[in-house]
Image (cartoon, rainbow, N blue to C red; front, side, top):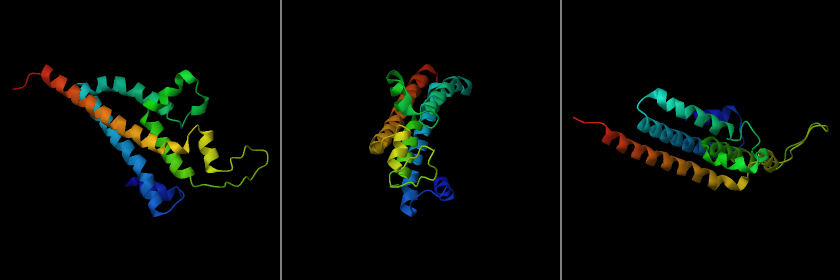
Length: 164
């Protein structure tokens, strides 16, 4: 697993068990992305047509995933968009994993904004340490929905196409 390599190279906190639990959101995200690919391939006949849908969906998903914008700064009418992004669920789960056990962060400069705990780091990104169950539930739900939609798209395409 490449996540083990990333975990050790990035010197993330924790030991062997932490590296295993770090891998879980990444594996769930990869499975969800695979289900998304199955949905696209079952729905569209050509890769060009699938790209017309996937590029804007991936753009919105990555934009509202929490890495590029502060989620807490979103207006109320846009705050729901993050829940349609597998990037959001993965980013939050990985962030919670990394920061939940950090009790103290030393401040080195008096003039800078200083976050003194892992919980403050999560809050600064608009994430909630209690959302780990929501994150895995969201990834599992997206996995199931993409596979179900792909299944129905495949049934529809098979009925529309003559078989010999």
